[in-house]
Length: 65
Image (cartoon, rainbow, N blue to C red):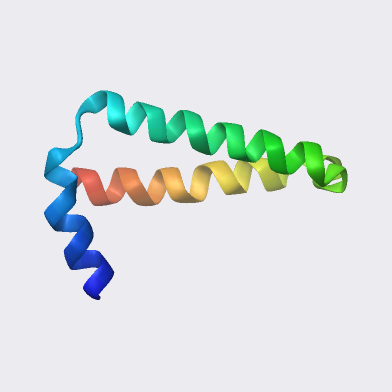
């Protein structure tokens, strides 16, 4: 709970490009993880779709409320 309050206080300082940089860094981390742990790339396509769709739908619902 304390972390959530801290984040709420800090998020107003972020610009659109800060969020974009965060996204780029997360994609790079995912690529690094795939490079270091190759068996993760052997998952079925459906698992990648689930990992993409579940958070996306959650955020869309939360945003559009």
